[in-house]
Amino acid sequence: MSQTGLSEIERKRNAKVAVICAFTFFGMIGASFAAVPIYRAFCQLTGFDGTPRRATAAADTVLGRTLTIRFDANVRDLPWTFTAEQVSQEAKIGETKIAFFKVTNNSDKPITGRALFNVVPEQAGPYFQKLQCFCFEDQTIAPGATIDMPVLYYVDPKFVDDINTKGKQEVTLSYTFFPSTSKQAQAAPPSPHKGG
Image (cartoon, rainbow, N blue to C red; front, side):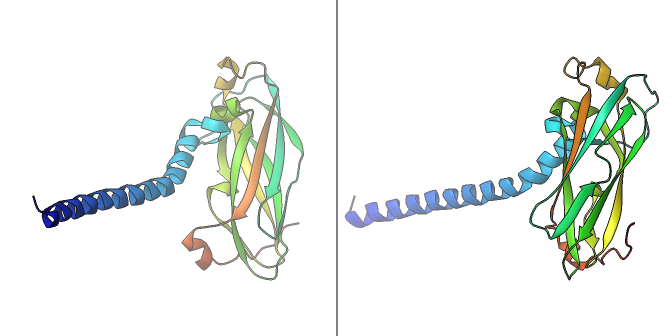
């Protein structure tokens, strides 16, 4: 076979390898972008990694056993002050409770943030049920505004039957506000009301 023939075969083979590499590269990038929302949905559905689950109805049973629920509030890369209005609450397992958080936008422009949440110990994640929470959607806050944000929650009675949670007396619900990355956040009107 001539030198030209070998070069043509090598060029075709190299082009094929380059196309496969390009598809693999772009496929991996697409998978990495899809991984975050898929992982978040999985965690919310299963309570994996200490992620509280979203409930649609209150518990049917309230037990006599009481847990101490602690609250933690954090902010990352936002000019906001974010605090829990109570350090902790005593809650009977299965009892619906409400906790309040307060956030102030310290800047001179409306800003949209989104709260991510977590439960410690992580074994309690599948049993910490939230009926209402500001973390389910973006929050746009007007310049200088302070708003109150409620969380309506309960601990599922199945908590007492799990060998991994039987000895646990405390559960910490932790929130961290980050700048929102959604495109809808840029168009959302700021929340006009001020809290107390």
